[in-house]
Length: 260
Image 1 (cartoon, one colour):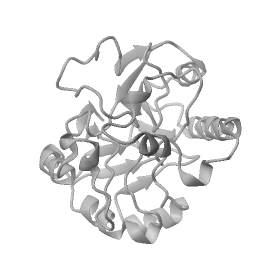
Image 2 (cartoon, helix red, strand yellow; image 1 turned 120 degrees about the horizontal axis):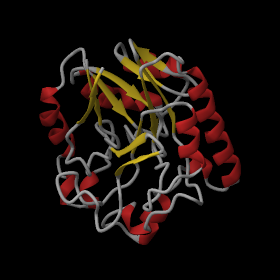
Image 3 (cartoon, one colour; image 1 turned 180 degrees about the vertical axis):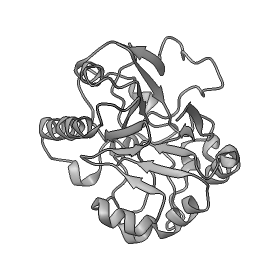
Image 4 (cartoon, helix red, strand yellow; image 1 turned 90 degrees about the vertical axis):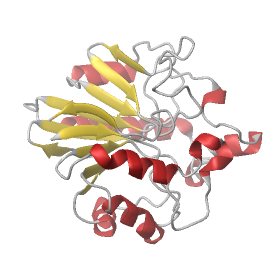
């Protein structure tokens, strides 16, 4: 079994949410993903760190999940800040079907591999340039893209506390004897300086080898100079490898992470 990663698919087969307003790179992006998916086999694993669908309700994800069902492999998801459709794990699975796995306060295990994760949020110690989040959008669109409508007006500290608690619960659910432990977060757990922080220290304490994250857009692609003028999207901190997996950054091509 090979392990791949790709986040921020931003599918909208059931609605009208064209992504090319964020740049030509996004034009026909679902077709690009499907074309690049060809090297993934039916027994392989694809880890998707949020922002799967623009659907507002679970019932509106049918066409997006049909697209994903047509692509080979087992697929593991966490919630992103734009996954407004996200419901209970049981309802999500019923809507998606077999070979789909959803994480919230739990972990999924495939042999010696264990995966957990959570959405996270904007933390003060995780700093990126604001221009990295949204490309070719109005200032109003950029502001509205940062938080889901249900969370605007809520106390940010409470959201952060809830997300950290979900992360701890997921980490506690990881089997201690798992040979490979992977954490998915949607919001980046590290900043542009790649410095250690409370989240990285927590992952290190649990022996997490790999953390995959998304949310950042409009960056140099993985095929270009990977430091992006000093910014580090793939780095190792206290023994944990941190990898940006946003679809546009990876040229809409699933990144092979490891062999399980």
